[in-house]
Amino acid sequence: MSGGHGTVQQEVGKFLGTALFFSTGFCLILIAERLVTQGSGIEIASFFQALYGGLIVAALLRMVDLLPFVDAFLGKPLIHNIVWKSSLYIGASLVYRYVKPLFKYLFEGLSLPAAAENALHEFMLARRWAIEIWVAMLVVVYVTTMELIRAIGRDRLKEIFLGPGSKSARERYSRDAA
Amino acid sequence: MAGVVAKVQEEIRKILVVAVFFSAGFCLIHVSNQLLTEGSHVEIASLARAIFGGLLVAKVLLSVNMLPFVHPFPGRPLLHTVVWKSSLYVAGCVTFLYVEPLLKNIFRGAGFFASHSHALQELMLPRTWATVIWVAMLLAAFVTLEELTRVIGKEQLKEMIFGRKGKLNNQERFRDAA
Image (cartoon, rainbow over all chains, first blue to last red; front, side):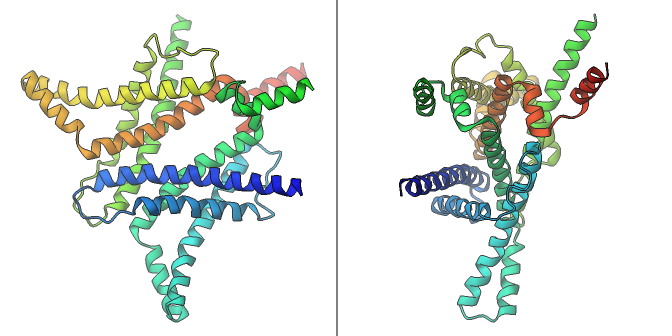
């Protein structure tokens, strides 16, 4: 039971970490986009949408992680897994970008061909592709960081960045001492 | 003499790596901004300026690296150095964004106060601060990677990401053959 509780805690921690990373990234991008388009009348997403976007990306990533072939290159140099997983995540975000409006239009009562046409039109909007570039950049940074953590070790990396005084390092030292 | 040539070669290689990293980042930001502002009258910097911007950031970074207090935290957790160096580099870039138009106007014959006023006005443009946000994001990623490379070791990190290849592999083959 405590093992299951630990797994759930770990999964929630992973999800929140991912959501925090993407929400922060999206908020910074939003500020920059607002500054660029100030006074032009171009409609920019709200901060709420940026925060919510981070949660959606985090949920998508966790779903993709459930696929059996997500870690197809274990034991190979990290570049394989970085390229593979980034492509998978970006592919999933593209699918989501098409499927979300498709279902929205279907639930609004449109026929499948009409809903598909509208969804495709939304999918091809230039502004959506601008967002996709940002998502792709953040995904690459995220996957590279995750793969480095896996290769170097979470505790070792925490020790490098936060010093031996960090909680995980202290736990490790007390474990080794025991 | 050979030592000087090797040092110059090393410095040029460093500039090129930094310039390629930032130019690539700026080009992606440029494409994203083009897509975002498509059909509006917002003026976006050209692709050539994005590439040139990468070279300028590389120059600023190498100039900042010459300061005696750029590494004040040896032996301390990396987080100190990452925050310190990123702040220094961002400050260097902001200084450059102010000094460049100031000097340009002074050389054009405008008085110091007129040049200062013009430079300050350019610095306060929303678009300039959008650029600073992007530069800061790229710098944080760059400094983190640079510091991690310093601690773990360049060759080890290369091996981790790209595997045992090229020079190292050849050296080993020769060693094994002997």
